[in-house]
Image (cartoon, rainbow, N blue to C red; front, side):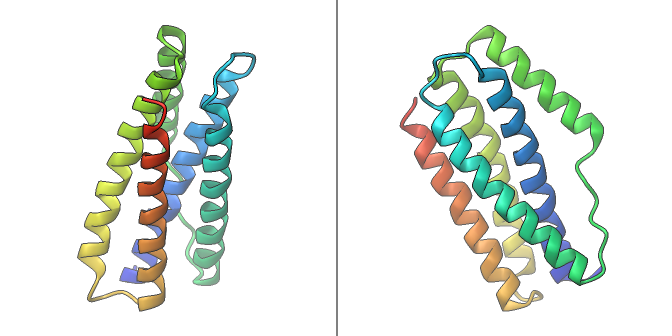
Length: 145
């Protein structure tokens, strides 16, 4: 697989996993009085948009992207349910998400660095935009700490 498609597939998988985790979290918070839900829904919409866009681009390149593994999804789902049962405060939810998104940003920074010289500038710009979205998400969540 070429570098362009590798970077796109990484962003696809990252956005797919984030979408799954946020949907799970929002469902777990239904009926609870959390102020953070509104921002979670906004972040989910943006991740969904990226996910659809990356999927479309990979399809155009005739690449069948690998989805996040079922084990990762089960682990994520279990972790989210456990956290919500233990402490569903906005600050705890924000803390949990900040840690997850931070892992994603670190991974994204590594990928951008790795592919800077080898990737189409348009895709690299898209990766940088995705990274900025993740960084902005972290800053928005910090307001709930």
